[in-house]
Length: 313
Image (cartoon, rainbow, N blue to C red; front, top):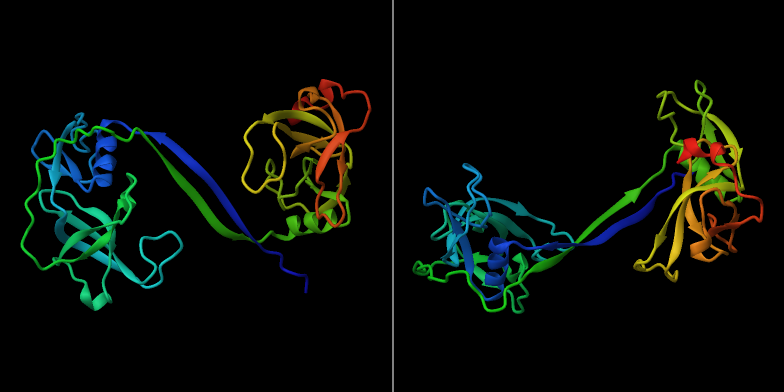
């Protein structure tokens, strides 16, 4: 039985966004230990605050402080916390309507077990030891049996408000290629590039997908292509990627391998980045023990005519 290939993969990038006046005040307030909502034209208080009324679409700017105590409106038990979640031990996800608010805020509740959680229970904010202006400034909620806390009167105006945030986005997953890509990866280990031909349109796809994206028919006929190819288009990379030991700037290009009807992407080396061009003829460069080409370099051939690759841009 053939080996089933699989590999852990991570997609990660920092998402940077600016803040409008309402979100700026809300996050700055969390940094200062204050929870702010926004009042609608019909006198409802929304927490978290939004810039536009979800019912009337009116612009909202009337900020109002609510209490750090509230009531659980619904909940679900999380018996196995994952990386990056608020607590490392089992906890409850809760919707909490803070005193003075008309909507509920989603966060974690630190409780010893599901039997200790119920709809209607009273809770309060547990603030993080260090606060930076993020929803994680509320470390979690905790059960509270004391007297109700009266909301303060903060106006939402701060001397040093936040103007933007950087939110890391990350996806961890395990990838397992199918029949076509397993054959493609296996061929690469032997320094061969193999695609598959559509039985109808006769186009050769590299990397193969197992089916023709145009005709929708299964592909089984293997075709070796390359190893040389033509740069169809490219971009110059000026930002160094995390964990990638390549000096910037460098060029990443779409390369149409000889005999293929689909361009693949790879790095171009062996030439100054500002000399890379459409039509440049290139060949793969392998490193010892590698399972795929490290990069492509110029072959020294004359540039390919545009008409030969215009359909592969």
